[in-house]
Length: 265
Ligand SMILES: Nc1ncnc2c1ncn2[C@@H]1O[C@H](COP(=O)(O)OP(=O)(O)OP(=O)(O)O)[C@@H](O)[C@H]1O
Ligand code: NI
Image (cartoon, rainbow, N blue to C red; front, side, top):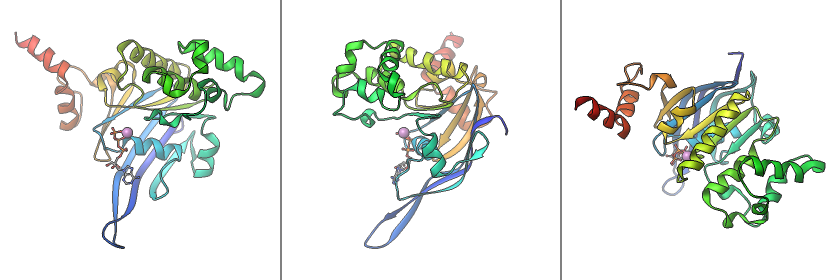
């Protein structure tokens, strides 16, 4: 499709591992995945731990480990991506907010990390402006990553990743363990990225939060795409969802059991 910012076709990711002695085994944790995201859209990717969500993100970012082999095609703005092109786009047009905050350099003040990659003459001003926008104090810039709370670190990661020319944002679990206010701030931020014309991939366990802001949901299971449905299909008893797996997932959410109980009173 022409207006897809990101399109992933038939993506499989395999690893070759040594088992006993020199015997090797090949595992394929991601199998024939298809996803696409258009300008202005948020696609939420949900699925159990180990279902292949982060591997998909790492494949798009070109940061899979060296022993990984991939099949299939990825298109960015209609053009086939290869490693060289990904490296060019990374940080410039494609932003990645990784699952682990360990990606920040522990020995570097956070303001200096945010200034990397900003135009030299305006780096300090832009960094301070970004901090203001993400609710961080000017003095927080002088802290090291270990001195910031998890929620604050997430906001720093946002500040580091999302600059003016970004067209695709990939956020891998941006919200675990943060308090509701910070959660809402991050969700609102992601929605505003999309409303400004970016394409957003939101990887999460938290389907209820994702549904507040996303346009589509893709459900992963064991490295496969079970179903992609518009967010509005997740309502009532899930009759608009196609697969039993998606229906069960939706109906087993605590909030829905609660709603059902209310109905039966
Ligand atoms: N470098 C690797 N070598 C071998 N197997 C790997 C490697 N990286 C990931 N895997 C396997 O691939 C599967 C998918 O991993 P992935 O990190 O994508 O899961 P996930 O859906 O992001 O899980 P979580 O929600 O816990 O973050 C897992 O079973 C994992 O063990
Ligand atoms: Ni993950």
